[in-house]
Length: 460
Image (cartoon, rainbow, N blue to C red; front, top):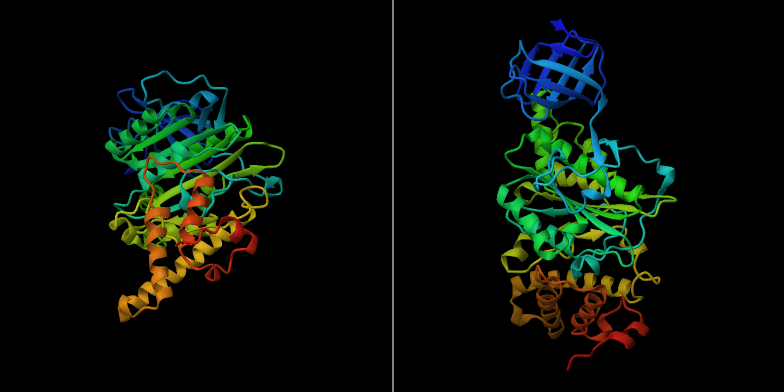
């Protein structure tokens, strides 16, 4: 081993996939940035994944193709990976490593920040409060999104989660507040990435959106950094510039696959489905960067999107995500096959922070009882449909037939909404009253008498 100076060395011990092992070096730090130079003088960045006395395992972000074991030069920078941040990131498109993709020069950065973020003291956290209107009734009325919340979307292969993600990014707003969106795509195909960018450009909202795109042909290790780079920008905008930031990340399943790939190459003992045993804590290091801090006006709200393999909600990725986050929006394949968009399942979807942030002057006073009644009625519709499949619809009671009609209207009029259609909270609540009024008033046991008198519309 030839040593050039205290930080630079020549020669590696072993290269395996996107990582290499180097020995006989000074003791380096975990997550330290590394510069790797091949024998043609080309440089690429890397990060230390594991360190010990006199050795390091380094993850090469540009891939190890072209690196020679004997001639490769490794320079340890003695600092973590830093990301430049400023308000100028809004309206821009970056790759998975933060390099501009839109043909424009790099933004003028206010400061350079550690991409791993700084842990928020739990005592200094504020309870998430006030809502973000997404313009989608099935979310705003039934599964309300709260500022500072983590509300994932559980989807499946072939379902329109990408379309839904862009619709939320385009339509979301916080009334009277400084609001922006960070949109993160990991492991997506080129045409999908182009669709994201074109959707924001044509709708005129790109100026308040920053896009990070890690394409499918990029090194898989890049996906492990992309959400951290994006969240670093989000933290700066929220906690330094007092903005309300919505971070949409798709697809977290691609992120987890990259994590499993790197773990396998490192020879780590796998846990469930081959994923590393630290999958939970790794996901938490991303999801827990959402929230609100006392004394700071801004907030970070996250909508991670993930595809469940074989639509299995017990798979490790959705399972662990559910433990960390505060609810979930579940897309249902059967509804999608019937032409309902967005195919948000009424019963398995929930927002755990919704109850403390609706009504009470935050939204209309009839919002909590109406949402509860819609859930209850739709749950009964499921039971009636199961009964009808056994005895036939003709044998149902007249009341059960009214419930079947309610279920059809609820799915086709309330849940179903065009991908370019934006409904306000008021519109969604009024539509909910229109649909629930198809049932007799005595069936609406979760709604207060004064709300029935004001909003119930008896059908002739």
